[in-house]
Length: 182
Image (cartoon, rainbow, N blue to C red; front, side, top):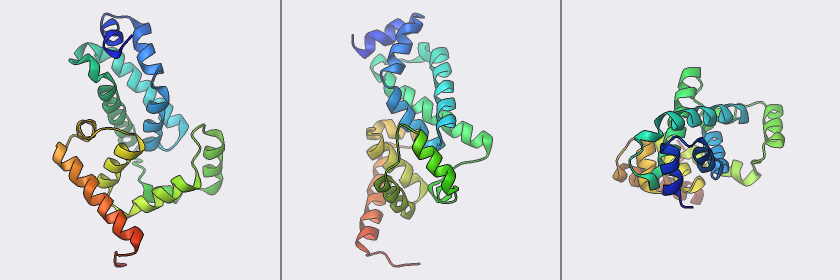
């Protein structure tokens, strides 16, 4: 059964249909939430709130085939709201301040283990501003299209493309060693 049919069933109040839609992409949702929340517990809290919001607002979805884009936008917004409420917007700069034992515990207990290569990529991403970093992560880590990223970040399509382009140029120049130290 295709996504549109499952969404139509969910709109009619079929909880199992909504559950099916969510469970079929649960790993994608988790990785997205974890990339914002930076720990398993908070990522799961964000997913839980997203599910409640989806249940309450599924009737407002106009295009059934846009369910996954819509739900990811909701998840990102929930993550940002939770981080703002808790007053702990965690940027990659802050990640370096995490206690090594806490990091080891998170890595060993997390099914989506952080590899050394991922940590190198995150360190490299410190070279770009937070908007560029977010756009690059959504595009290349979460494989979202430009329009979905624009919807999630509430900016124009051109702005998303520009952020990604300029961020990648900065990374390219930095990686080559062409950027002057400041």
